[in-house]
Image (cartoon, rainbow, N blue to C red):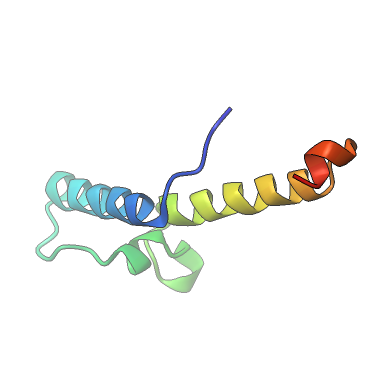
Length: 76
């Protein structure tokens, strides 16, 4: 099972991806992670955002816990 990480660590991973893109693609400037993870239709580069993925996992886990069929798991 995949576990969420802290927002600070997710942001650092996004910055590490931006640094790797900078190195591999030879961009003149270090890419902004907000522009890097925007969809292409919105004039971004379309890379997946670890921060957004992490937030989605946290929300999904919370919803799963709140809607659990066992009261002991739902109310803990």
